[in-house]
Length: 377
Image 1 (cartoon, rainbow, N blue to C red):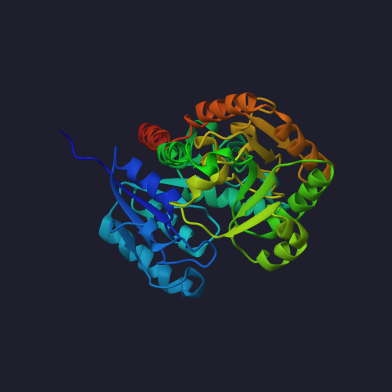
Image 2 (cartoon, rainbow, N blue to C red; image 1 turned 60 degrees about the vertical axis):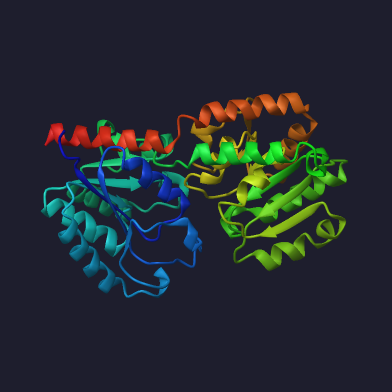
């Protein structure tokens, strides 16, 4: 039996999404997982969400690190690991460019992991030209989340045959099994008789557009809507959003749970009637994967990268224009007016769709695209 090829995968800080992908990669490769820092203020993954197989280069928050020193450590770590395949997250940081340069100068198949879409930000001609040069010089192939990211990477000069998909995946089996377990455990309890609710999971940050969701939800309730809204997460807008929703919170119509870790999330998905993601900017939206794996219909903004790939509008959920409050209200109303049987059918379709976006599929795509690069070299 031949030895498996060495693969190094680099991220700023590993969380549960990344760990599921790393475990799947081990099916095909001898994996070296390298994280730049032991923590990151932006996400605050809890320590239980990583494992001892991760090689951490620096202690403390990524935001506090000397990026030049970390870059030197990346080069040294790659010299020790000597991977034949290198997965690099992005091309905008000095550490990512260093890793890609190491791959290019040491003959490794260097693969870009990207979820950027053309319409994520305002694009400038000079910046786009620089990106095209970087990609041409440093990367052999790319792996992206879906259609929009693939189209953008092609726009930046990478040929379609060197672009794989299924980058944006979560541990579907974990969410589906844990949500089902929560429901079974609650069959004879009070929880199972409560009215369904809308649930949002994620950071409370401007791009998530939660203020608009709260405004729309208030109008939905004023028009006679009976569902409540559960907001799971924390972030810079926590206090202002709670103040905006103060009356709704006092009436029990809106509940802010605060931040929850990956082991707590299935409970909130299990008893929800629908998941809502109203972002005005979202390269993908992995929480949509989680909700769909948990068997939920979804309401997703057209600005989310996953909308084209995961949401069959009118079938497993609704795609909304999140800049229109009236459109959000309409989607909330339509969903809550459906029968439980119709919502269940939508949730079942969600599970069938998301089955094609699993860690095992991601690992298979990495293996495939690495083989494509190998044949072309």
